[in-house]
Image (cartoon, rainbow, N blue to C red; front, side, top):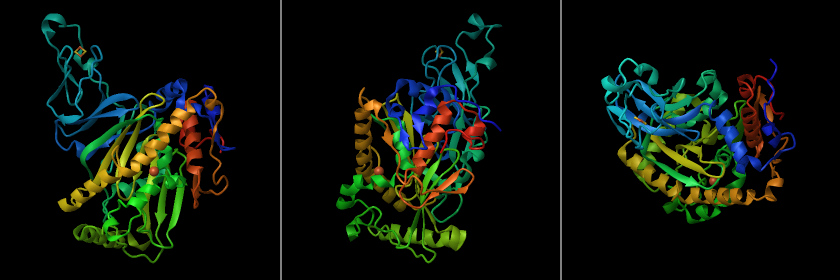
Length: 450
Ligand code: FES
Ligand SMILES: [Fe+2]
């Protein structure tokens, strides 16, 4: 099939063939508006985890692009995602981050909606609206498609978007490395504690790109490794990744849907490496998980260990510890709101969950020692890119330009540190903001050249 043409000039901002990308992507109001219009209104977006709303009436207020949405469970246990805006004058019908409620009652004039979105209460209905207001027609606005993948909830505003499985494509097995239990059972994870939310004066794409395999930036975290924050630190193993087995192969993959991951393949002969020496009980738990996973998945599949990855457009994950899902919500062109969801095995002992919770706080979030390094880079990069002169000069994405190999149609694999994943992400980004059709966005038809 032939590709539809890009309707605007935004795809010219990305030159994946020569490895340059315009700074406009990270600072421009026009680019930002095009993203809201053509990208966040179509792509499948992560909206939360099923374990956050276990009971009827539970809700979690989430976001899709810059808009507030409500993830909730109705009385019949069905999960919904609604736009958080009243049909009367637009007031937010839910002003809390999360909770449980029988009804969503608008604070402005008190129209009330049930958790399946129906308009069920209109003050003075008989006197003021009888015979005129069709309540069914004024329900909350619901997403046309919602998917539950191993507890992770995804939604899209586009009724024509492909099913989530197709959108996820080959990145599935790497997302599984995050969502599956540590002993190899499918799913079984839950979100622990509250969600960390904070604002960073940086464009949202810095986050996505960093986590799809920017291994080059590890130098930024040198001070953390010197201080030693790992769960082995008190026994002398300070580096966050000092527990890696010799002979491990790092693999970076970029997918035609725009996703990118960085995972590692353990040597064929592998054994458990202690990573939680600071607590013998926690160590024993993870040793047992390792053995059970190996037995369950077999010697080949169990060699894969997830490090990091990003699903197009703005969900990233950590596959090991701190095991988490995080979203880079756009907040204007030069600001983003970061949300981190921390995962544990739902049936892990409390001592393990508590140990991990402390490690998560030490490592990640606005007060976490590693995350602070990243934020510092993105803050200054965004501010320094915003000037009239600075904007005339593109960024360089020429690292490992020809090191990738196509291992499946549209899927590139690279085995050295690279910017292949980023180049492919921005190609797909350009196809979205250029408003190309789903055949291009899924990689079936040609879009921006590689
Ligand atoms: S805006 Fe919600 S009832 Fe009027
Ligand atoms: Fe980092």
